[in-house]
Length: 146
Image (cartoon, rainbow, N blue to C red; front, side):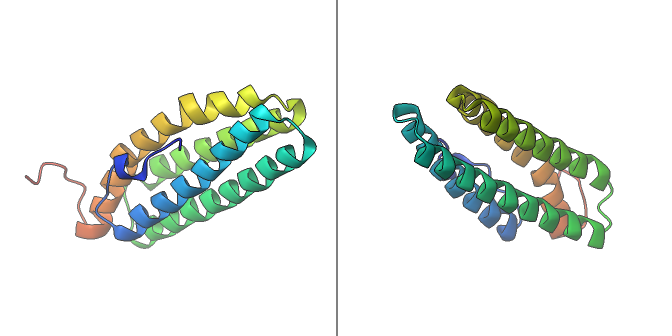
């Protein structure tokens, strides 16, 4: 297991937490396929990674679109900033995928999944998603409510 769901930050909206847990399940399954390919780099394992990565990408697009739709519906003031982070993440996912697909170098995926993605995910949830969920829940963005 790459990422422990129980170690993820929790936000004030259950639907967001549920989607994050789904993300983690997909990412952990992808990581297992990466480890399998690392031990046995054949075409079948290559294709399995690609199918799982594409599943993860599609899920992430839907995840982000769901948040962005709600942000627009509720006139979330820093919508553009949050959407910009989503756009950067999707661009990075695409870059990694195309580099992997072209090179078949498993270290491209391993470095991204181990070193980059978990830190980005935690940081995004702790900052952008926490504030966004608070706004969805209360209509305010104040973090000084305690």
